[in-house]
Length: 90
Ligand code: SF4
Ligand code: SF4
Image 1: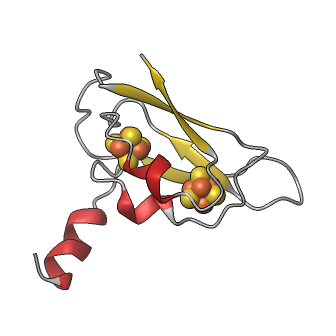
Image 2: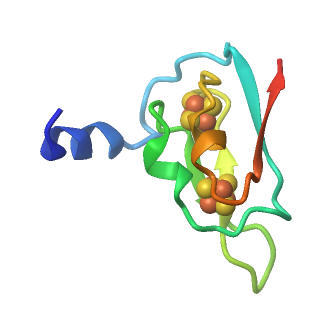
C-alpha cells in the first residue's frame, strides 16, 4: 500500500463509520496513569479504534479505545513505548 492509500485508510471519521460490532479476540486496556499521551498507538490501529481523549485537567490527552470497532489484535500494546496497554482475555 502506498503512503497516499494508507493515509486514506486511517483517516476515516470513526464517528460516522458503521460500527463493526463489539466482538474481539482480546480486550486492550489502557492504564491511563502509565499512558504518556505520545499518540504512537493511534496510527497503528488497523481498525482506527483509538482516539486521544481528555483525561485530567492539566494533563495530556490519553489513549482511549472504542470497543465498537476494536478487534483485539494487540498491535497497540505492542507499539506502546511505555507498555501502558495490557491485552486481557475477553
Ligand atoms: S487491539 Fe488492535 S484493533 Fe484494538 S485498539 Fe489495539 S490496535 Fe486497535
Ligand atoms: S502508545 Fe502508549 S503511551 Fe502512547 S498514547 Fe498510546 S497508550 Fe499512551
